[in-house]
Image (cartoon, rainbow, N blue to C red; front, side, top):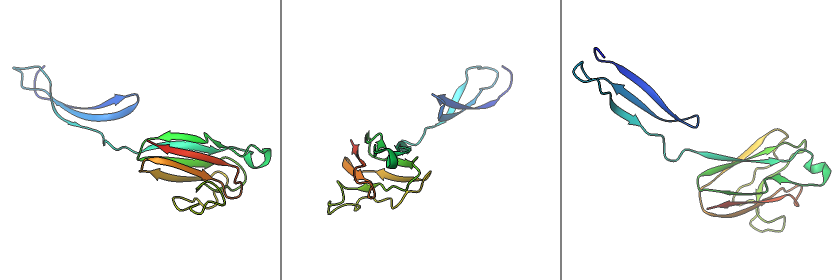
Length: 143
């Protein structure tokens, strides 16, 4: 190898960029490449989990979130997507008679095709339900 050169390389693992390396070559006397710097990814990259409000749930009697129980790590955002044609809510609590309903999160009406997101930072078990359809229930467990 003659001369000095620089190459930028993106390190991919499973299709995700995990670092960038700048590789430079030493003068002609040495052809061993050296790495000048590696940029590591952020340690707390946001993770998301999706929960569907199943299409037809308000008319076919299934009244379902899918999945209705999810287990996640702290810092994960759960995104509920309304695939039904009727508005639904995602409201924390165990039902209409729960005095703490909606105190942790409450989406308000989610229109068809829209989403609601909530980031869970604290470990625990979080029950939720749909106010117009209180038999639609689910749980998010953060460990």
